[in-house]
Length: 153
Image 1 (cartoon, rainbow, N blue to C red):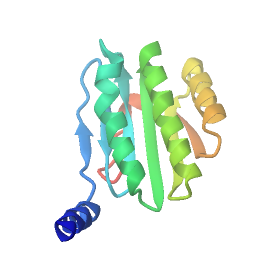
Image 2: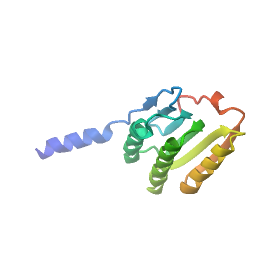
Image 3: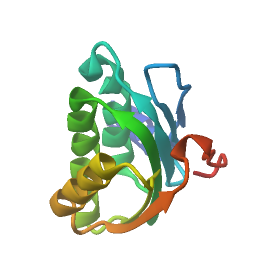
């Protein structure tokens, strides 16, 4: 029985991380979360129930936490976040902050926003204040809706 348990545990540890792809809609953002450490998300986020929408995303990040890539690259580009979504995005970045604190990965984030969107810039600054150990590059762009990140992130 001990050998059987060991074999099951060894097999579970070698299992590779499954990617999570969530397609955007008129009210929800896209997410491309790759086990290779490339995470990208953005668009419009105003789901009817933000906690339910973001559940699988936060669950995936919890799984990634166990065996992250040595560097985690995050690309973000939101054109709109409602207040419940902004709370969920903060939770994601707090989880990434804690992950970096473990020393298992270095988190680097490139966050794009519409150059004229002062509210989004203030929100990004709030995220940076709460997740300051993450390396952030904030990138104003003429129209964040035109950005499409490649499959790598």
